[in-house]
Image (cartoon, rainbow over all chains, first blue to last red):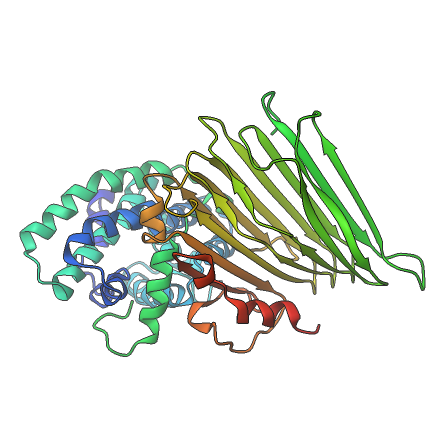
Length: 219
Length: 250
């Protein structure tokens, strides 16, 4: 297996063919509700305080389960119980299918622990893959949180009249928040320890976004 | 956890089947850690063979620094309980102190609980930990309404850390939620809103209602959450959803 640091870069790379460009991290829903360009940094912060911790914690718990030879179903159930918005669960499971298919072609053994699950969420798949590829818990949590920041920022350039340099500055400014997510989630050992921080405003936007047909992004 | 500075007021409500042909048994008990502890008194409004209506009436000023309110509700197999709150609760300025509000609900097989919570207002300077834990037996039904108000009108809100854990019959988590609402997170998580109303229904297939713009079907079949954010309680009532899940026949 290749070096784990390189594989972490691979998993966080937007060029990975897993349809990352279809996601806005609910930014499109937020913009539809009136969020403006100057609000994007606080939107990033809201995600890092809320949903991103659930995703990163779930990925870490899934990694732990695979390493300990424990079933992944309780991790999936714990994630779903912490993700109240059906639109967000559906978007995650759709993305997960692409990631699982890709990884299954590249590393068939790595995705085998996912076999009992019909349609797991993205964080569960990412966690299982990380276990098989030798990524540590911190590296995994970092991939999840960093990917979320970049997803929102890349989408912001399509939705709002912004300068890419400014937006990259927002990514850099969000990195301490990414490290806070890593610190809060890398130690998760079991499904019940996964953070459950809710962000009701983002949930409202995500659900409203799923009902509209006028959109660039899937979620 | 009972600490030395806490004034504990614990309310226990147990409702179970009565003698054949008779009314169900309602047992209530209030325990106070001291003479100054405030608590909620459980008042039985009426009860029949399988059904009871019980009001939770505050005794003493609630909720102040050092208060620890515990409400422990057990509904026996096949019993149907309505919990009523005559008024809302205000968590007042705690001037550096803290308070907690813990609710535990245990629903037996085919039991039902309807609890129309009144607004819980977190005034400026309040610091509250509020935990709601529900365990649902097989075939049971839950309809729970909660309204959280961040600050009295025109006031910067205090801090509340609210956790909700709802487990299904096999211990499977249905809803796990953590709302850490403090000075630096409230605006981020609630998008600048002041009121959050939630209606949770478990164990019932709910058809569409006019409140469905605010509807979130959870991952467990028969589990639905309605949620509305707003600036005033009357904007966020979710009356149709509540009527449907609380009034529906079993």
